[in-house]
Image 1 (spheres, rainbow, N blue to C red):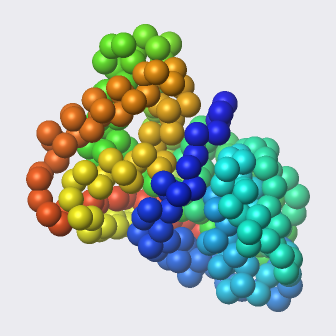
Image 2: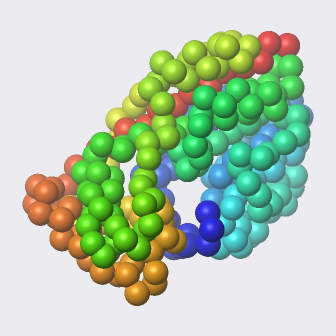
Length: 257
């Protein structure tokens, strides 16, 4: 991203809900003695630390593009775990595990990206990825539709949020074509019980809306957010508690030894 709009405190407001998909992803990984692990999109580092410890990894490197997130991650460094700022798409090296939780959907062209990540694996190495796929939920659709209104549309200069996540079966085909085996691909719907529909706005302020926050002039972001809130709450049922459904794709594979 061109500027760092990430707010670790906002992101952590729903820490428990955001952690469950990571735990499900981690359950797909088979620990190996002395493994070297790469976490693409490590965020605040807490879940990377958890993976490092549970897997008994000798070395884990977490990469993220956000300096704000990495400052928080620095608090859990040590014991073979370290963090660096970097471009997720340009990651290199040879690893026993390449892990990515809720990060690769920010990158385009998964048809090229996934095989490249598979190429970072040592023999016997594993790739394990979770990507959000809530593109069609009102929380995401209304964000795009609001951006099409003026004055936001002109300020965005033709930019539109495009879908980057592929169909689950496409990931299976990409993994297989890249030579990975012992494949797992699943589409899961997480049912998050929030206090009310207004909490959905707080959720996406920590993630999705960063795309508009970084691209709109500072004077227009708050009006955009207010309009988004108005439109979204008019569309969501006013129920308390509120069920926020969230689709995610999990996929994993192993390079034969």
